[in-house]
Length: 124
Image (cartoon, rainbow, N blue to C red; front, side):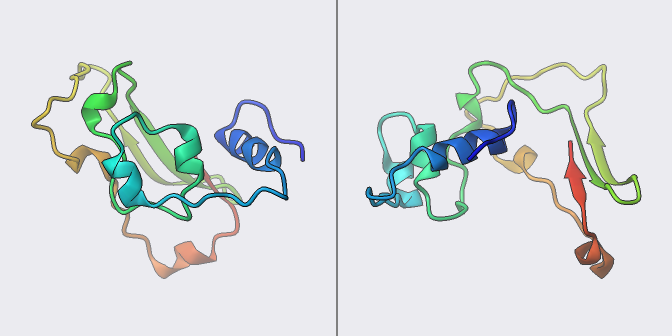
């Protein structure tokens, strides 16, 4: 199976295609990962059977200072922006503290029923 270079989807497809069909994949539970004393690895996450209910790491685990500063959702067929969030350019980076909650980690959308009829949606 070939995959696109550079995209996370390509990484996930490559990881899946590399497994042997004779080896039964061990399914990992979210609760097991949350109780794990060692760092959660990409292999751990790929062994999950579905999405998690909670975040698997605290905001303070961001030791590299990685920050998402913009996000947009688009209707690619009509070249129209459906939603766009952007951090003000003059806002400084503020590292998370132990007291931070997860409120800054969520984006809530309120789309109409028409959203479900879109054929091609893009995210940046």
